[in-house]
Amino acid sequence: MAVSAQLFEMIDTTVEGLGYELVDVERLARGLIRVTIDKEGGISLDDCERVSNQLNTMMTVENVDYDRLEVSSPGVDRPLKRARDFVRFVGQMVHVELFTPLMAPGLPENGRRRMDGTLLSVEGEETNPVLTLKLCEGRLARTPSEKNRSAKAAKNKPAEPEVIVSFPFKDIEKANLIPELDFKGSK
Figure (cartoon, rainbow, N blue to C red):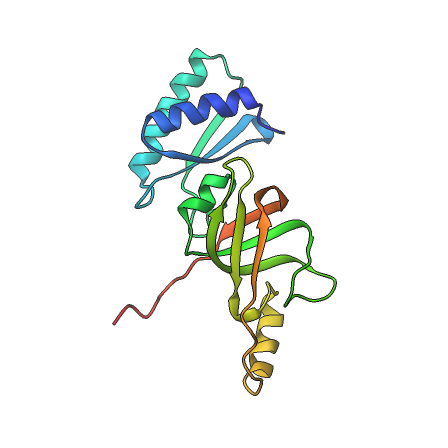
């Protein structure tokens, strides 16, 4: 079930008033409203509790029909929903899925819808900026088994040329950060 623009706006105003960023709002089965929040430095349990208490009060006052409220952090693979999300994460690794295949030099002749790469820039008008992405070593998003097969084949292959693509924000169907986890620790 979709969230109405009015409910989204009320939640957004409340969350931002508390100093957090609203990432997403979902209205799910059995009266569940799921709210995802973020801030610089990450979200703690206390942050979720604070926002939950404030939203419960706001929804009671505004007579919002719901049974349960869930407030959480976006996690390490944070979804990127708004143009301002992309501005905040310039320089980070992202996974992007487009509505239609992108045709560009360095891509297969039938284009690509799914791409992984470093977000280089976000430029242009605020409502529909153009994003520039440097694809990961010329590679495109693959399934885990394809990655394993291609890693073995790539050992004897010369390096692929760097591929940089640009596309408008409105062409993005879905996007998220790619977590860069270091389990060995920095030296």
